[in-house]
Image (cartoon, rainbow, N blue to C red; front, side, top):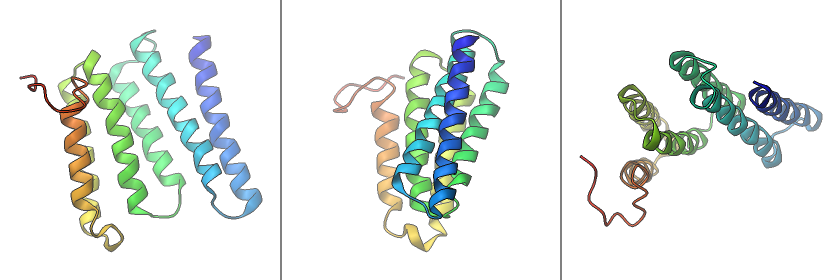
Length: 160
């Protein structure tokens, strides 16, 4: 319980520091985004550990909290940049696929695929993402094929 509390506290502290620095400087900066990103990753790790290693939370509550962290992280940018949202979507898909290597849940797989495709659909109607739709789908397809079996060169047969 102490490790989880420290992880959650650290993640929240990193987010608070990022927000404090942003307000002090009055404009966004890549360093503030890095702090917030580190905070989100720390929160993700603590929540997954609380479910998987310590069974402190139910799977549904863990999924809800993970989704809340993801939505909060995306909303905190405040810039409405769809390319950042697409990159963040791919970053979230990668650990989800790695998690599925060890704990396969059909709802998690379909939820991850639905979320990734929903962001692609949203990007279709945003002129700032013009030309990136194919890249996004290509990277997403690669992640779907490569990560579950750590098949980086895609030369192994896919699990059935």
